[in-house]
Length: 474
Ligand SMILES: *[C@@H]1O[C@H](CO)[C@@H](O)[C@H](O)[C@H]1NC(C)=O
Ligand SMILES: *[C@@H]1O[C@H](CO)[C@@H](O)[C@H](O)[C@H]1NC(C)=O
Ligand SMILES: *[C@@H]1O[C@H](CO)[C@@H](O)[C@H](O)[C@H]1NC(C)=O
Ligand SMILES: *[C@@H]1O[C@H](CO)[C@@H](O)[C@H](O)[C@H]1NC(C)=O
Ligand SMILES: *[C@@H]1O[C@H](CO)[C@@H](O)[C@H](O)[C@H]1NC(C)=O
Ligand SMILES: *[C@@H]1O[C@H](CO)[C@@H](O)[C@H](O)[C@H]1NC(C)=O
Ligand SMILES: *[C@@H]1O[C@H](CO)[C@@H](O)[C@H](O)[C@H]1NC(C)=O
Ligand SMILES: *[C@@H]1O[C@H](CO)[C@@H](O)[C@H](O)[C@H]1NC(C)=O
Ligand SMILES: *[C@@H]1O[C@H](CO)[C@@H](O)[C@H](O)[C@H]1NC(C)=O
Ligand SMILES: *[C@@H]1O[C@H](CO)[C@@H](O)[C@H](O)[C@H]1NC(C)=O
Image 1 (spheres, rainbow, N blue to C red):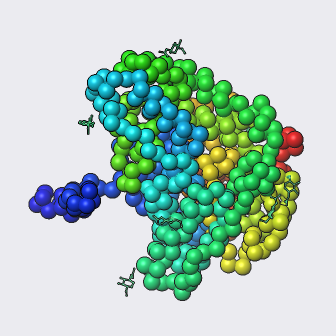
Image 2 (cartoon, protein in one colour):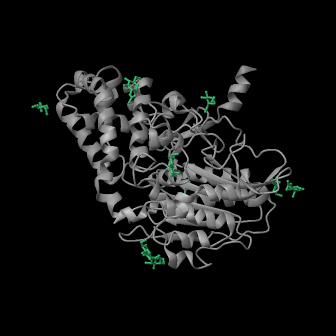
Image 3 (cartoon, helix red, strand yellow):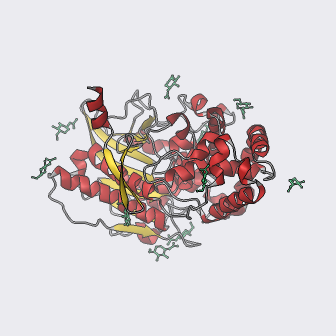
């Protein structure tokens, strides 16, 4: 009996090695459409923005409340898992070379043994095949979650121009469309779906990619997160650094090299098509991964979130567009005239349609821009408590919403802004679902399901509607 169960659960597949087919038993997949990455959760959900998307625990059910129908969805998505950025990949490669040049082969022992034969082969900037599949899965999930809408309406898609972001939008629509075909219930079969691509060139107005606000990009505010991270680094890195230096004598790991060694765990994991946990991960303890997650959260919170004086301001252009879409009123885009909105695009129904059966919108962007958008929405606003960012994901899991980079902007992260009509309510309601966690709306009288009435929600976003602190950019 148990043998049969095992056979059904663990599929057989054939691995091609040097042209020979070697039968192997594969374990259950790490990444699934509905719950995302679910292997070695005790550490893999603590890799900050380098965690693969996973369903974040939620206190409020993310399913649509009974007696309600979702009538509109905007998804804002990060691209899928990628290789390290080009400067990082150079840095990691050089570190591996230094390790090989400083440590005699016979010295690699225990968990470090794999380093003897490890060669650095990661690319730069592009989606990995694991990352592409994450986005296909995201489109499949979106189709299924909003089936009553997706059967008949195709999302209006925009993407920031970097190739991994555009490819993510394509992979999302592939998953969406395949699910639509498989469901047999749609009349709409035209494919591929159009994508409006917004340039990331210098000087470009792009609500999906920051860069226009000079004071934010180059002024003192650009150092707020470096300082917050450096303070925390001086607390948690020294013991890890000392251990690496003891086990790999002669390399002389710096603080940055130590963080780089930790980065190599998530990057090698997502470089594996099936997301097999990298051997680098075993060099660090679970507590150290918690500290690493906090380190990455500090970078996002003080770099692009509420912790940065100009962080939320970077998100106001996108929030203006969201309000226009939610209400069907172009006014909210006009209000943010002096922000990152490109009015050539947003004044044209071809590139910024409103109403007329446009109920689904999908925007593709980056972790930093999503962090700013959430801040402009007033989510995770702990400034009322006047304290620093809580120390760990667990501590942060309070009514404030549970802020951690791994919970908000992992690879293939997705925020759903849903509008719904309900049996017992006159007015339409809005709520936000961040990686399957309902994050209650702030300052608009949210109910037990984290929802606000549309008008109250619009009212509460006066910061975004008035352009935030865009004046301070120049
Ligand atoms: C490294 O590769 C050599 C040559 O293929 C092999 O003999 C050795 O066992 C490998 N070492 C480890 C730790 O995998
Ligand atoms: C993702 O999209 C790219 C570009 O359209 C395509 O080449 C690739 O095959 C897609 N990946 C998957 C897993 O479908
Ligand atoms: C769609 O149609 C195909 C072919 O008729 C059938 O095999 C499949 O079960 C149908 N799928 C659904 C979800 O109804
Ligand atoms: C606005 O978008 C149009 C159309 O893509 C583009 O030609 C123009 O350069 C953009 N302007 C700015 C300021 O980004
Ligand atoms: C290791 O780094 C320290 C501090 O940067 C330096 O003083 C020392 O000379 C270095 N040792 C080697 C072997 O490079
Ligand atoms: C681009 O943004 C700047 C600064 O907010 C604004 O002055 C300009 O009108 C915008 N250009 C377009 C085409 O929207
Ligand atoms: C965050 O909360 C503070 C204090 O309640 C408030 O003044 C501020 O406007 C909020 N920020 C945003 C972006 O909503
Ligand atoms: C975070 O918690 C650790 C212990 O887990 C403690 O050593 C450290 O001082 C705390 N840091 C902050 C910024 O609260
Ligand atoms: C759910 O709410 C309770 C009470 O506020 C809190 O203690 C717990 O950490 C929350 N759990 C999650 C996953 O947010
Ligand atoms: C939800 O949609 C169903 C099917 O279209 C409809 O019968 C029902 O009245 C709707 N409920 C509400 C609260 O709008």
